[in-house]
Amino acid sequence: QVQFVESGGGLVQPGGSLRLSCTASGLRLDSTNIGWFRQAPGKEREGVSSISSGGHTTYYADSVKDRFTISRDNAKNTVYLRMLGLKPEDTAIYYCATVGYTPDGGSYYPTSDWGQGTQVTVSS
Image (cartoon, rainbow, N blue to C red; front, side, top):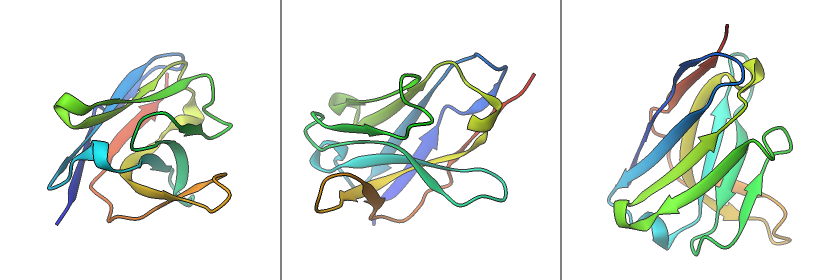
């Protein structure tokens, strides 16, 4: 059974940066598409970014475009989410999961169970 482990969250001031890591037991992450999602208090979980199995295709939510970067380190079986220019509205628990893409390729959806996530809090 695949188990995801997210790490790297923390408390940062507005404008700060973090790098989240996603690892998984029982799965080679370079064999599948991976996405980052987040859930803020009182809100539904939403997609943040995804990367295709080959690493050639990435997606970003409009709210994080030009601030967040998703990447892979296949040797470490890890997917990262580099977050710059953090805003209070980025505060949420962040999760990673395998994802599938819609037929038109315009969106993605989770296809695995959720891990514990990692808390990101942006506050002064």
